[in-house]
Image (cartoon, rainbow, N blue to C red; front, side):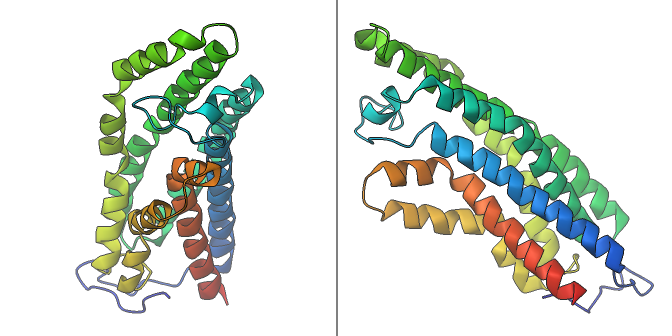
Length: 241
């Protein structure tokens, strides 16, 4: 799982193996990352799981989401706060598997930058879905779809902007792994979260239409991150053994 070969350009001197205490610390941090993804993913399922019958141009404004009680949206947003904390702990721990300090710093800043849109994106969807459900259940069902689609149109630009901000850290991690600049073997680059996401996306596309598919699709990034952190966790455990 871990590479014993080091580029001379990256490490002119032999890089010592990580201490047992450091490995234990990293494993705990990776577990925190998994917990963070469970918080975010749980929120994704809470705000979407229901009858997937579409009501307009947005596939997630459905008959099911119109009936979701407000406590589920409140809980989904509440979970985002411990979620981003645990998620960040896990992501920052990954930098300890990078061989040299310069690349660690690059990863660190890309990661800090990439964490900023997560709650913003979560908030946009929670607010729109919460409003959609409230309007449908308080005598404004005829206008609910028009209002919520218009609200989404106002903030739709945030989606691609957020993706541009979020993706570089994962692309950089892929580059570091495929070029042998981490403690993992180069082949581990193909367990990158973006690769996992693509695989899960294909799986979601062949699922039968239903509430499970809607929840699974909405939580794809969190589900991908859970698998990725788990692979990092298993790799760390193998090094420790």
